[in-house]
Amino acid sequence: MAEATDVVLVGGGIMSATLGVLLKELEPSWEITLIERLEDVALESSNAWNNAGTGHSALCELNYAPLGANGIIDPARALNIAEQFHVSRQFWATLVAEGKLEDNSFINAVPHMSLVMNEDHCSYLQKRYDAFKTQKLFENMEFSTDRNKISDWAPLMMRGRDENQPVAANYSAEGTDVDFGRLTRQMVKYLQGKGVKTEFNRHVEDIKRESDGAWVLKTADTRNPDGQLTLRTRFLFLGAGGGALTLLQKSGIPRRQRLRRLPRVRPVLPQQQPRNRRTTQRQSVRAGFRRRAADVRPAPRHTQRGRQTPPYVRPLRRLPFQLPQARLAYGFAAVHPYGQPLSYAVRRLGRICR
Image 1 (cartoon, rainbow, N blue to C red):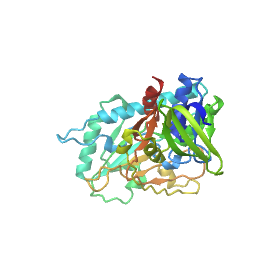
Image 2: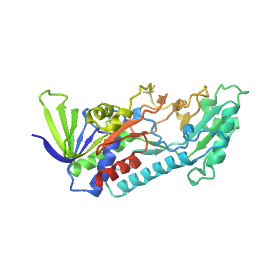
Image 3: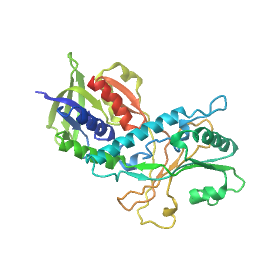
Image 4: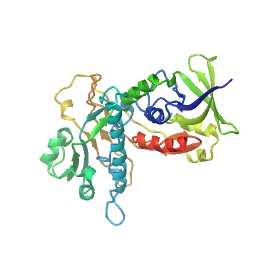
């Protein structure tokens, strides 16, 4: 016999948590079940070590504003992304002010910076700065080709660099570093207090849609082969990262044929030592171009995590590309670039609530 519930959220990450909070605000009487394969929430993609944490606010992401064929940079896409992130920040601030989140320790002020080399890239960065500085969200961004100034911003990255090599940098003191893992845990704790049922160590084995439009999920306990649970729900949301793609294939929806999963590599090199002179000199998030002009994927990124947790100080991230993550809501699949959880959840919410 299937257990009935109004909404099932598959995956215990920031996406499911955000949508769950929105649903509880708008439909507090709805029964919601959250399913997570692991023993707790935010252990994979939403974990602080497994995403950039910049919120993709467009302060240092150069690929959001490419150089057009006419030699002009259009800031519209970057501005739209930045606006979405600010809406997310307003949403989080409201939850903190209303006591629905414990505190704002999940977000910290960390400057964002773009550093480029060679004349072509320096010319691009100057044009990008000129296009951005007239926009309200970027008006405090700084630009410099002065090596001494750039050394003040990023001393370790300028040390030992060829004096004859052209360099340029954008710098924004308004950047932030978001611990999506901590944010997810606070949101899910709030949801549990509102009666949301959380099923940990539970894996979704199959998804089927019945003639009346309801979804039936067959799940299994990862610790007990006999721990089967069947759920029947009106609305289904897959927020299981790359694992959502397998479930999308099982759902039978037409758009599943257009979604693919690509491999990615992201080595993280933590320093498990107390802060020292070298680590304290890296106090910003930095991004730049790859050496090959044809490579449009995001360049290596250096991040410092000034969180109030563990003694690790200096993770170095190499991001060959950002992996789109597929989600399903009410029979609708979409590809979402990680980093704008609120705007994405609102779009899914509109589909669910109408």
